[in-house]
Image 1 (cartoon, helix red, strand yellow):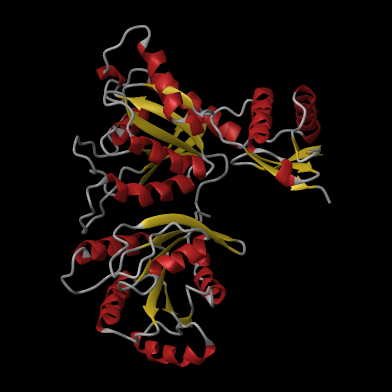
Image 2 (image 1 turned 180 degrees about the horizontal axis):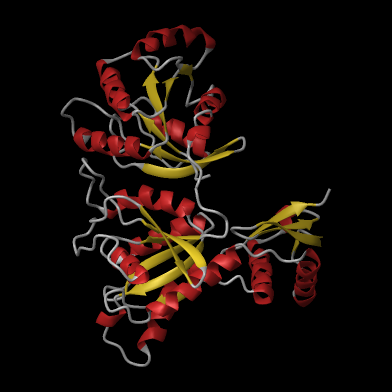
Amino acid sequence: MPKPIIAIVGRPNVGKSTIFNRIVGERVSIVEDIPGVTRDRIYSSGEWLTHQFNIIDTGGIDIGDEPFLAQIRQQAEIAIDEADVIIFLTNGREGVTSADEEVAKILYRSKKPVVLAVNKIDNFEMRSAIYDFYSLGFGEPFPISGSHGIGLGDLLDEVAKNFKHIAADEYDDETIKFSLIGRPNVGKSSLVNAILGEERVIVSNIAGTTRDAIDTPYKANGQDFVIIDTAGMRKKGKVYETTEKYSVLRALKAIDRSDVVLVVIDGEEGIIEQDKKIAGYAHEAGRAVVIVVNKWDAVEKDERTMKEFEQNIREHFLFLSYAQVVFLSAKTTKRIHTLMPEIVKASENHALRVQTNILNEVVMDAVAMNPTPTDKGKRLKIFYATQVAVKPPAFAVFVNEPELMHFSYERFLENRIRDAFGFEGTPIKIFPRARK
């Protein structure tokens, strides 16, 4: 099932960023006691019991004319559109305000599940303050304290009850699902059309033309595929911001549903910082990745150009050392035939499982080649390894003391595993575990 998306919505200064950080488990959002300080939506992932989800922190919604409030309202409405479940956050110390009532009206229109939370209820004596919030019409209010972490478990239990209504992906495990991500106007829609060989997606040279993520199932060489086009930054009936950072959530949703992610780069314009940020989402999600350099027909080149460009990619995308690079032109369809074999290979490696006995031979050979490190007189001992997951491949390495596993030695083991089994196109994860 795709990861559910939770949006935290409420007027300014009710503690949205504090709650967001508590749920995520780290300080991701700016926290300051000034209304309107969270001006952009912040995205992260979280986990509660067996549930994994993506979560959005929004700026507050208000009806006044203070600076940034119009933009904050727009950001929150977009987040509401994208969310599967909404946490409506209020301030128990201030009671129900007219701004809370305005937020409630927006949430009524969303037709989404809403869980009402009353923040800043720091002790039991304050719990009587929550009863006024029944008037907002969202059922039982949940008293919580972001600053003390009180009541969040009950809140998340209620939120998670709504996850079962989220539709599962309708494609079987044999179907390879791949998405295209990248900043606006790098040619994602044109590339979809080139792959399909027909005009199935609107193509324009205006950034942000694609309105929604579009699933396009098709078959090639006996293999079923689904293309998830993620160029969308706008939605019918609503004007979305035209800055690429507001397409992040749409890309995150598509990445979460994909086996393989195509990171599309403009070969004519070259690599910019935004490309690395976008690619980072796919890597962090553990998806297989193919780097696609589009518009290669427009690049002046000689026999060294392609090699130098790939070297430049390797220097900028150190975290994607496993990803293959494909150069092509969606416009002229030149070299388009080189893309699909890389997608298939990356998908197969993403789901590859290796035999435990062969894996341990590789690991023990690696230890013999490069003995384990010591720390304060203690040496790391590796007893055995086993693969515990696929998509991406993950390996548990059982050791005497996990804290002795330095990241450099973990990287060494990863490289030896890659040398033995390939795993081109996919990240792999190694987890040191104490042997019991």
